[in-house]
Length: 213
Image (cartoon, rainbow, N blue to C red; front, side, top):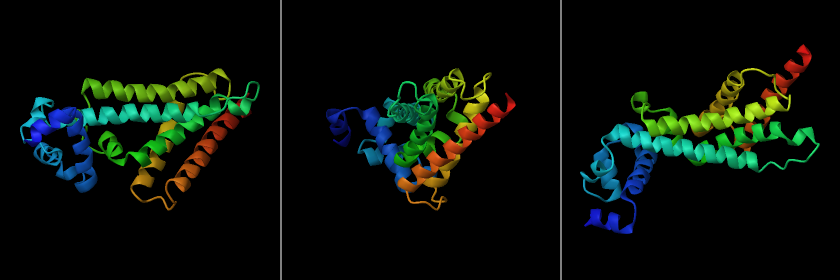
């Protein structure tokens, strides 16, 4: 009966993904089994195999969902910037910084997704859907770096080093915040700190570039 009820009410596959997040929230990733996911979703223990070959595939798709949500959070934050024509302080650099805030905000709002994306073993990282979602997220960040380069705010050349530097910083802030090791009130204090850290990083890069001219 629980299994047919899940089918009646909607997408069993999504119900299993949602149950996976609930299980990770409740017991952590160490307790993750398909049988326990099925129990939390209210379906038979064989139901997950209708959609997932094994636990690794389910986790890979959960991580892919997380990367897609991360991309959306970065884009939403960047698009919230009001660009004033002719004002260099309101262009690409502000969008770049805002995307970093979006990254941290995503981690605060979706800590279980964040854990699956970055903390679990990488044995399922070869999943094509996960790979593509991760690449889209990183390409979004690279795009903001390239926009700053086009406006001559960041040094020209390969964008990858700047993207990796920015990613490392905001990821560190996010990880410290959701693990309770950042002594700041969430979310306001954490996001304000992320803004300040991103501004300091980009200002330092820009100033170093200007000094070399």
